[in-house]
Each structure stands twice: as structure tokens, then as C-alpha cells.
Length: 640
Image (cartoon, rainbow, N blue to C red; front, side, top):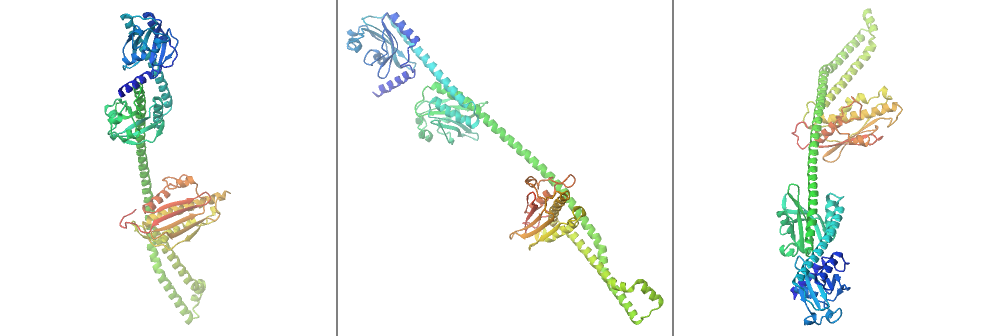
């Protein structure tokens, strides 16, 4: 009984796929029934389709009704037998003598029906002829009816094919329009959405194989019930996807797929019954991924689904290959950019290193010059300074001796008296000690200057030593003293230096290099203030008329000290500030600066493990902050 029920369900499904029930009359079918009636010389000919609870006549000759109950007539018996049914005289056949169409109008006495058999072997109806008197058909007439029944099926198949093609074209057009203007991720999302809608399936997905592990895949787009859901990674083991990748051809599981892949949680969770997929192969045949459609019922119209999947798998493969090629090109471009950047940075570093070496060499030369001058001055100075004390002593002795002579010989001879008057001995006696004292003070000042010059040059301290930061600042200011003084060309206004020194410990550093940093920052501050004064002379006041440099030092914590050098000059814009420490960047006129001072200073402080920053804004001056560690991690390292 169950087998008969399943057979009838399958037969009705086959009938319904033709979508012919309750459609208007069509000349192609009417011609066949007309021909059947003429050949068999019967008044009635019908093309009958047997539905679940009725008979429906697609074409008729000699009758005007379009439907009849299953029990009224003989066509259902032809469907059951799947063979030709000939009833020469219905009243003479006990099986049909009481049939409603026999005992009541139209009072059929003769019936011959030929089954309409589909390509799958299902009988969906009949081509039949009827008469109201008993009669017989010749064998030739019966054979013609069978031929005509095949023509009816050919017309139905042709009609079905045309309908399928129309649906395919409409669906293809819909999907094509949906994806025609998209690329990349949007293309894949659009494709799976339109495919589920066009094919009426539960879900569709596009996956990309992991190029490093062909047993792993990632979805690029996954649509369930016409909704895009999150992508995920999955293994090809125990999945139908593995067959597609291995065989590299379209694979179909029209039904019962869970029985073929037991334990596949993905199929179980989505209640998948059928599966069809095609590989996505690139231009050289390499499998990149797959396009799959799945449904919760057996797949209908496999030919149409296969056609769809095959067509759009090719399109998806092209897009995926384009994306992968584009990604590879982007990676290659990025690599080339990184290499170019590395080369540019290496070249810039080389130029900076070269410039720094030149600058360092200049500073070393300057230091050597300063040290040489100091040494050359120091030798005669020591001679002078050392003898001034004796000269003072000898002068005092001579003056005392003269005073004794004046005491005991108050009336010298006329010649001596004339000499005393001519030399103004009283003034000489009073002024000579002052003169010698002044010489001693001058020699002592020169001696201090020579000492400061030697301290600034630091030729004997090329390695890391404990440096007195305040001494380095004072030495630098001494060298710049001439530029700090008032100059007639600049409104006769000097630059005031305000020192706010904290209690700093000695700092371990390369003293010569740190002095160079102080020199660069203070020189820039003086240049900025002098430039502002020049603008003021031209009636363009842009800063404080009283130029000032403030130097502050403090211990930040137990590990760092801070040196802040602030000026009240014109300040800097954000653009200038952003490039301040770049090599060769300068705001000075051509020939007035190399653009290396701040860059070299930044590198020196950074190599000492510190930080050099600048705070500035237009009209608000500039503040350079040097943060340096008190101790260096490795005292034995040579010049930084």
C-alpha cells in the first residue's frame, strides 16, 4: 500500500511539472485530437490528464465538458494498467457496464485509450476515442493512436522545455542583473542571494580553499533563506565539498545526503537533504574553491540547477581569481613600497650620518682650534700671571726704598729734585699699585676664559663621563656672549638670559656632544630673537620687545633630569614644528643654515637614552625640553 502511495505521489509530481492543468486550449493539442477522431472515425476524441481527484481534458472533440470525476470514465484504469485499454461494448463488459458515463449521458458504448507516458515511465493521462455505439478498431488505427499519444507527450515535453527555458532565462537574467554591477565581496554576497531566490533552494555558499592547507576552506559568502549570514571556516573532511575539490567537477547529491555523510554537523544543523556544487577553477585549472547550493528537500529540475551552478561557478571563479591576483599584486606592490621606503630611509640615514660626521668633524675641529688657542694663550699667560706677583713685590720694595730716601734725605740735589718733579713721583707712587692690581685682575680673567674654552672643547673627554650640566650651559653662554649683547643694528637691545638652575647631580654623558646640543638650541633661540628684532625695526612688531632666553633645570625623578630652554621669539607654526627635527629642514635663508643642527641634536639626545621635544605656537615663542637619564647603562661604551 505504501509503495502504491509513493508511486502515485511521484506520478502526480511528474504531472505537475508540466504546469498544463487548467490552461487554455492550444491548437497543437487540438490538431492531434481532431486527427485521432478522423482516423478512428469516432465522434469523440480526448486528451485526458488524470489528477489526484479529477480528470481534466486538455483537448476535446465532440464534447464540451473540461473535467470529470475519477469514477466517471475509463482513463483512470488506463493510468493504473499503464497500457492500452480497449472496450468494444461497455454494456457487454461487466466491469464497465455500470459506469456513470455508460448508464447516463453521454451513454458511452465504445472506448479505446492509449496511455501518455513520460520519459521517466509515469502515466499522466490518455489519448482516447469514444463512440455511442459498439465498434472495433483495426490494429492500424490502434498503432496510429499510440503514435499520436507520443506526439502529445512530445508537445507536452516541448511545452515544458520552453517553460523551463523561459524560467531559466528569466532567472539567469535576474541573477546576472543582480551581480553585473558588483565586484569583490559584494559580488559573492549578491550571487548567493540571487541564486537561492532564483533556484528556490534553502541556502547557497561560495568557499575559498586555504592555499596552505587544501583540507581547509573559508566561506566568502553564505546565504540561508535569502539572508546573508556570517562567514566561517570549516574542514573538508567528511563533507561533500571534498569530492568537488578532489574530482574538480560538478557533483550532485539529489537526496539523502546526510546518510552519505553521517555525523556532518553542518548538514544536520541546517537539515540539508540535497546538495549540488561545482569547483571554482582558475585559468590554469587550479581549484580555488567551490560554489554550492543546498536544499531541505530533494532537488527538483536537476538539469536546470546544474546549468545554473555551472554558469555562475565559472563567473565566480573568474572573480575569485581576479581578487586573488589583485591581492597578490597589492602584496607585491606593498613589498616594493616597503623596499623603496627602506632604501629611502637607508639613503636618508646615510645622508644624515654623513652630514653628522661632517658636523661632528667641524665640532672636533672647532674644539681643537679652541683648545689650541687656549693652550697658546695659556703658556705666556702663565708666565705673565706668575711674574705679576713678583713685579708687584719688587715695585712695592722700590717705592719703600724711595720713601726712605725722602725721609732721611728730604733735600736732594737739584738734579734728583728735577727728576722727581718731571716724573710726578707722587702720582706714580699712588697709581703703580693700582696698575699692577689691574694687570693681575686682567690676567686672572684671561685665565678663567682659557679654562672655560678648554672645558667647552672637552678634547680629553670623548667618552662618557660625569658632566656638570650647569658648567656646560655656562660655557656655551660664554662663547655666545658677544651675540647676546646689545647691537646697534637691533634697537640697542641685548638678549637677557635668565638662569633658573635646580640642584642637579652630575650626569653621565658625552660632554662634548651635549655641549653641541646646548650650542645648537641656544644659537637657534638667538637667531629667532634677532630675526624678530629685525622685523620690529621694519615696523612689524611680532613678539615681545624685550628679548629673553630662560634656562631651567630640574631633577625629574631619581633617573632623569630636565633642561628647558625657552625664548619669547616669534614661535613656529604646526607645519614647521612637525618638520623641525628632519634632516636638512631649515627656515633660514640660503646659506644661513644647513638644517642639520636640530636633527643632530635630536639624534645625540636620543642616543643618550633621552628625549628632545619642542613646544611652540606662532607669537608664543619656543620651548625646547631635553630629558636625559642621569646614568648611562654602560659606562664603558665609547663615544655615543
